[in-house]
Image (tube, rainbow, N blue to C red; front, side, top):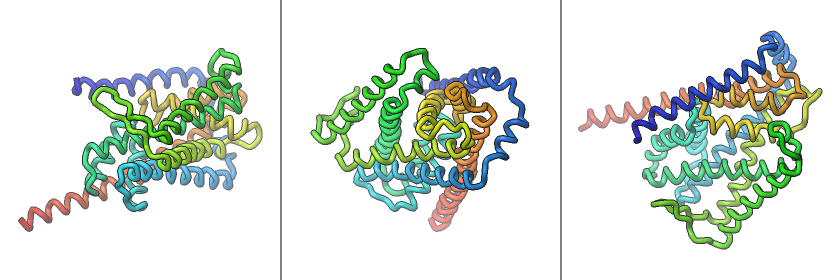
Length: 315
């Protein structure tokens, strides 16, 4: 079964890229590369600077994910090491796809050197993923209540349904918080037991995830032109939907999925401006971090290899 899954995930990713690529082609077949290049050139320097700042905020919050999980485990580590591991983990997993699997591999390789065992690292990975999901649900709830018309951009349903869904999402977050405060009994799923984190851990989760998501959405917002910009709240809402769809698709880097959902959800913005903004997002949030992450992995593995060779020489 495990060997079959090793082939299934890559196939799902390839299928998602092909499908989204075909859908995206139909959306962009009337758009020229010159239009996109002109939109990129029109982004002023100060908005590039703001987009870079938003990237740093997003990756800083991602490091906080790991810090929160380590506090939950009672294994606090230095911020420098956590930031490096978190940055490398997310830079690779965002580009590779199957973020839970690829993220677990990177974290296991790094945190095992600090004394964490496989079970603890598994809990850390699960809690980091849950923190992201919690933030998406909470921020999505606020967006749907404040901008219920967003749902009509993608689905043929009334605005009231969006607002109702928003309240429903916030209720789920409220139940999670209540479970922590009231110390509900752990939930059992098969052989696994899910324990509610302590209230102070939950409080950190409620801040960390929205900050990361708002930072990532800010990259796109600042890369869009000021004229005709639908506003940060709308961009954040569309980003939540498109980024979630990209992660669920398992497509590497959400390739094609992110662009297709954004174009469908923002029909009033020039397609060339949207694509240019998403190219900036991919450059700052995905490609440049990936380059640095590869360097970190090479240096780390080289050090481990040298240590192993030195140990063999001594023995």
